[in-house]
Length: 459
View 1 (cartoon, rainbow, N blue to C red):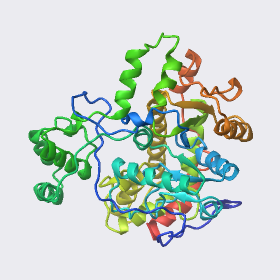
View 2: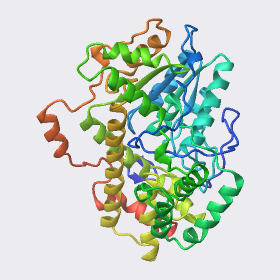
View 3: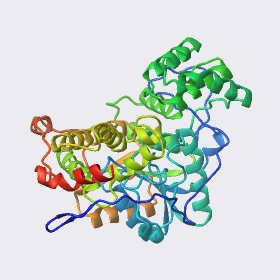
View 4: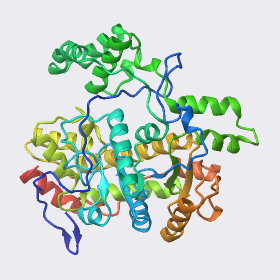
């Protein structure tokens, strides 16, 4: 539905089909890699990383790769698109939801016209029933980067999935690949548990096999549970025994230069030279209060248009996927939308305005909390330069464009467009604690009448 004078346009359900384009990068995955927590204890086990080879420590000029991240709703996609036009660039998505076909509105996927303007990679490469791991992303994104560079174009990695970007930049742990026999064995061991939806019993099995961190896995993340058991059976060690290259980078930096060390920035620059590309990384955000307002309005927009996120959530249910059952159905907006529609179906296709507003509030809160986690995650990574998205786009764009062409080793963000990483004073802290959503579209019962009608007739 879209907002027009006199109310909302009637809802209609889109037929979801694969979007095909010559600019989409698709690869076959010969193996999957597991994510081990950044809080994992280090061990003597080795890891493979973009910084592991001494041959990288040369004076040879490395190829430049731009990374643009930021919290949901900050405007990173628009910045990346305009930058790509200026630099003859191609965009490689680092979004864990945009890889899925049919999940367009909830993932804020670039439009077909934008994809025609600038080549995009890693969009629409999977059906929502398929899993996609950080290890698979690493392989796909690195291959796409090589392809873009080989064409003489500029790779611009854009997205807000922090773990994807951390592995992409710093490398992946050298976790052993499971043999076919082990993969089959693990699948057989967990198959009955999954079919019976007995998650707790399956977690207990993996804990007893040797992974004490299994209870912390997201519920129903069967891929991650299987991968943990594969690693244990292949190596005799749990996934946490394999240190992430980023953790090693941080440990070395912290040991060499404590927080109060005046030469910390210089030492950091020296360490970054060990990476296999010249990464130029930016984190785009706005003051937290403004960001929260923007996110709330964005959630409304996703519901206030034809073929919005509820239509996509309905499609997921219609193809037989329950909420919170895999990566696609755990995604923010889709999980809440699917659960809401299921409740409506249990009530014979009816929903009260109160129930709709409760769903909307839950969707908005989950989105704000996700943005908060994103800012915390990236705040701890020293490679990112923080930019203020509330400043004029042209000013920010010019700086990023010039930074790409800058030959100096140290990049300094001007104060006029610099974004502070932390809440600065008590007033801001108090305002954040007192924040309450004020909807723009959905304010009264009448404003959601069209949606309630759609749920009754089509939902």
